[in-house]
Image (cartoon, rainbow, N blue to C red):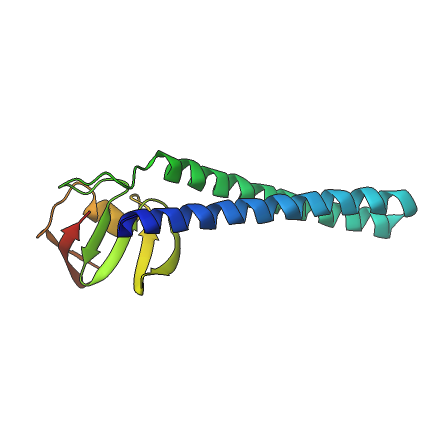
Length: 149
C-alpha cells in the first residue's frame, strides 16, 4: 500500500467510525425517548422529549454529512495518479501535504502530517487542474506546487 492509499484508507476509516458513532447515538436517543415516554407526563416530560428530538435531528444531519463524505471518498481511486490535480490527488505545496477529497481533520501517516481539503475550498479550487511548478497566492501566502500523486 503506497502513501496515498494509506491516507485514503485512514480517512475512509475515520468517516466510517463517525457514521457508526452517530448511528449509535441516534439509536440510544431513540431508546431513551421510548423509555422516558412510558413513565412521565406533563410539561417537564414534553420539554425533555422535545430536547431529545432536537438532538436527534442534529445527529441525523451530522450522519447525513458523514455519509456524503464517505460517498465522495468511495468514488476516489487512490491508486490513480495524474499530472494535473484532480479530486483524489495528493499534493505537496510549500512542504504541506494536501489530500483533495473532502474537508476532514489533519492526520499523521508515516510521521507526515496530511490535510484533507475539499476541491471547492479556496486553496482546493486554486490547486484543481494545475501541475507541478504552478505558483499562486492566497491571503498573502505564496504557494508552489512541489509534487502531485
